[in-house]
Image 1 (cartoon, rainbow, N blue to C red):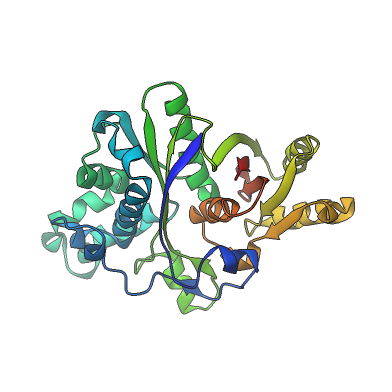
Image 2 (cartoon, helix red, strand yellow):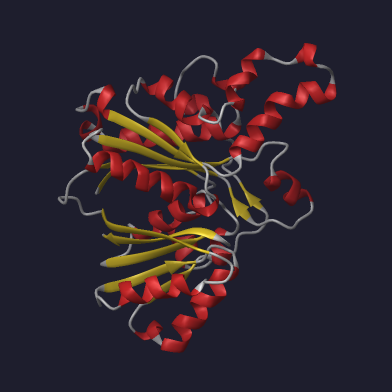
Amino acid sequence: MNIIGIGKVLSEKINVESIKNKVKVKGIVEPENFDIKKYVKYKGLRSLTKATNLAIASISEAIADAGRKYSEHSPGRVGIFVGSTLNPLDAAYHFMTDVYEASPDFVSPVKFSSSVLNNISGWASIVYGITGLNSTVISGNLSGIDAFKMAASYIKNDVIDIAIVTAVEGNEEGSIYHLGNLQEQVNAITGAITFIIEKGEDSNSKIKKINSFQHTEYNREKIIFNLEKELKIGQTKNLIYGSNNLNDKMIFNYLDGRDISKDLNIINTSSSIGNSNALSGFLKLMTSLELKGETLIIETNEVGNDSILKINS
């Protein structure tokens, strides 16, 4: 699966070098002076949640990056897939604030669309005239990666030709990011990253494999089992992990015990990415594209679904 376009709306402090060099994220790091009008002119966007506008802006960047490779496809053959962990909660708060603070009589109907689960992907389809598949995924840290996997599946089955895949996390007033930042307990990145993908093997940046599986509280070793299986193939040059949960220590102990670090360029993103939810996997993927050779990305949830991605750059 080829990556033909990349777009991102992140803080100027967050880039591949800061992640590779393990620069610690402190507090909630948001895009500076974000204004949707700098990216796209469309009526009604100001009434939407911050996450929706961040996603729309990053899609604009990715479409521009893809150029003719994107524009040659008809709108009905383009799919849009969004991964977001906290935005549905933010959107509900965004809509219901007037009810709590005043009365139902003062609820703005303009804000209603933000409370719909498919709000972000729906608005992106409207703004960019996309009439193909449209879906939203919410699965913790794996939200972005699972959206990516869904998009790849539809492309392989010839339902669509090309997919826009976005991971986004905003920071509304009701967000755990906002509340955590007030208490100085949460370190995280907010913003949006978009990849545009299509079928093929002719790109310098391609996803070779997405290995998804699940674990419970009592069988975390499944993560190590799957990692070991991938490493046995012997072509991996880089390994990126760090999902800010109990699995990180287990992976670290495995790598340290096997002394694999001599043969691999290992990047632990725990401190440089923080608790970034849906963005976590996409920040790792963004980093992998600037590394040489084959890279394994490990993204996990505390309990539940996990993925190991194999990327060639």
